[in-house]
Length: 422
Image (cartoon, rainbow, N blue to C red; front, side, top):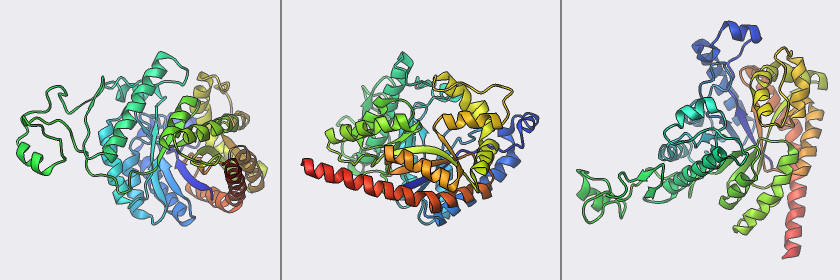
């Protein structure tokens, strides 16, 4: 069965470009953020009622323009866990080139307890230099594209080290670590000193925390997660095969923010790399595809919704980034919302039309890579609450059953082939 994750990108709404200018910086408009927050919780409750697998948001900072105002996903996740019954809560994801990994391990372990295991954790490398370079400055964590450049290699090295520390903090009773970025304990060479509880820590704490000379040699990160060994882990990826192979070796869920052509080409590599690490998956299993669906009463209405709710952010935000990485030309500064529809569809990320149009396109793409997870992104509250909930209701009723059938057929065939080879 397809697992649907609703990912809300918090956009402070404006009627048009002129109003966004008049209210600058709208990202700091407290009244509009409060309205956005209240409706956001209603969407999460609706997702729970509709049988959605998970709800998520992002970590992004400094969006004065009002796009992606999501600086602290863990706080939101904790509240959502309290107001829902079945849906899982998470984030896609913590940008680890800017984070303290011990704090992330602690926060997500508590979240896992608050939700009693209804939690998943996402990690991302970070590409928005305006904020990653500021928040990650003490780690050397700068924004990077997957281009093999020195900055890319350094970002990846830091990312993998940070995630590894989270995993160890989740799963080991105590940890020690020494690298350019972290000394655990501090100072690493001599161990932590002058700890007044040294005798009680030696007697009551984790074995090995205190050495024979009374120095701290390891630290114990508490609490351990509710889920053992840890919550499910998702890794955001746009263009890097190296990230996919790394995720496969760890059993993480690669989350493809990319066209079906690229995702489809990476899917078999994920399966084969996972198999080499002793993890057996059918094609598409334990993988996720990200899409922005807009469903109307007709194809025309669906395209109108795409222009109205997504045109401005595509023109001002996505377009410049897609242009920078060379995957698509940007959108002209004088383009209307209607002018953005064609490039949005051409990106391969947006799907719009009537329910049958959207269903057929999702089925076409899922036949290429029958992914276990579909991450659906909505630009709420630029797209009003009622519209988001109706879109989601139509997806669960009109689209998901067809994708369930694609998965059933694909995975059954894949496993039968594997059994024959065995």
